[in-house]
Amino acid sequence: MKIGIFAKRCGTTISTLRHYDDQGLLRPVHVDEFTGYRYYDASQLPVFARIEKCKEAGFTLGEIRLLLYAKDEETVRRLFESNRTRLRRMLEALEALQKTTSEEIVMQQTMEPFVEKIDFPFVDDEQVVGKWEVLHATVGGRTVKLLAEGTRELYFLPGGARYWCFGWTKGKLLFSNGTDSFANAYQIDEREDGLYMTLFFKSHDYPETGEVTELTLQKRDSVRYTADGIARKDDVDRPFVNDERVLGQWEAVAFLPSGRKGDFRLPEHADDPSRLFCKRITFLADGKCTSVYGERTVAHTWTKGYVLHRTEKTACAYELQSDGTREYLLLEWKSGDYRWGGRNCGSYVFVRA
Image 1: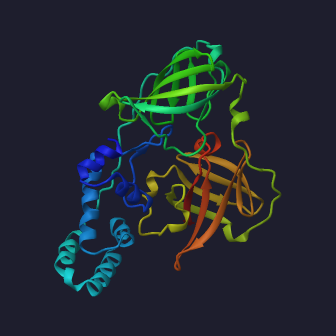
Image 2: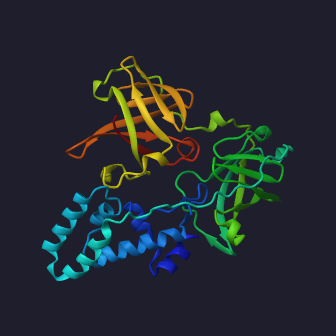
Image 3: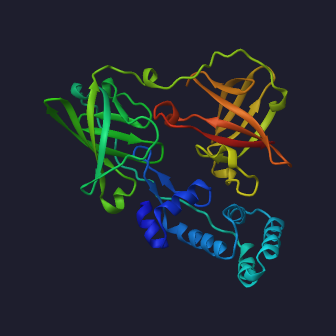
């Protein structure tokens, strides 16, 4: 369900939910890669209720985050004792909460994938080849602001070639991100000031509501782009400089979305490692390294400060941080959102194996 509907069911505001997302308390189950719309699931309603109860008992948002992701009873005990000292008048509320903090909070924030047939035979449509600019979006007759980061451009590559999450055939923009897949119809309108496209883009809740986002685009050029040609590229021809601090194997424990690198706290709210796409990375002394993605091992190179992906032409910066007890490796994750979407990248967090 969209953030507005979820906010009404929670009896709260959209701005509150956005703030909770920014604080790492309650994240959307899905963010539409094209429109930036946030979606929530009914299973998250008890989590929101839990947050509100903690606030009533006097916990700060930072403390609530620790409680939600607590891995041990000692952390829970220390937080409650500190709050009792600071907020004696709320002792009864604190004791009521303490009885249930040891229970596992189920954070299964999942949504059924939206999988639609997209293996259409390619039919050419030369008038759409080139770069298009998204002007605005309309939902249910209302013009809405596009919220996603980065550029608002869409490319139709010659021959229906794929880039990022997109491919096409005549009359359809095809979308697939590895989980969801759907076909979006388009119509072309030739006006005095150029060529326009109306794209009926299916939002993530389309199977439930049948609602589409009507995007208006204007053609900017008819250049025959390639996926590699329009991708953002980093300097990957960096000479090898050793960094003995990172040598060896590191295990992934969390993923920090864009903008959250500075406020991570581990291990209290680390993600379930089994759900992470990147599992581990190993740095060798000769400038080689390997990463494990799911069950696939990929070879890279590295130099001090960067992991270099020469095929994708991305240089992913790393840094070492500590919480006073453990050392963490934070490594940028530059996916298609970064290479073609113009968006900032998130970071994986690793600990030594």
